[in-house]
Amino acid sequence: MDTVSREVTTRELRDRLSEVLGRAMYGGERIGVTRNGKLAAVVVSVEDLEALEDVEMCQDVEEYRKAKTTDDGERMSAIELREEASPTMAEVLHRSESRTERATGSAVEVLAAVRADRDEQLGEHTQP
Image (cartoon, one colour):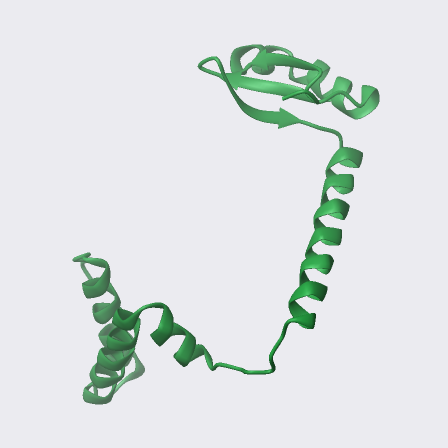
């Protein structure tokens, strides 16, 4: 990464955190933190982070404008989107609705039925 001015290991970071933060805050340095010899993170100033967020926002706005110009006006409900994305999701929703309808009584029973269906789909067997 060409924009990183220096690198420190995680051990060095622990020992010299104040110095590293000072270099980033006041010196504007971008300091890479390595773990097991590989770059794992970069310490940057708040100003650098804000500039990055501004760039990302500009990109998002540009993508939105492009999408808006190609919008055909057709809309899809969330349920239709789920069904298109994953047919099994529609099945899960249907089973959840069925269990919820069968669960009579308190809201706790209804919630338990929905959780049971979710856990079944996730392949988890949780204890209540």
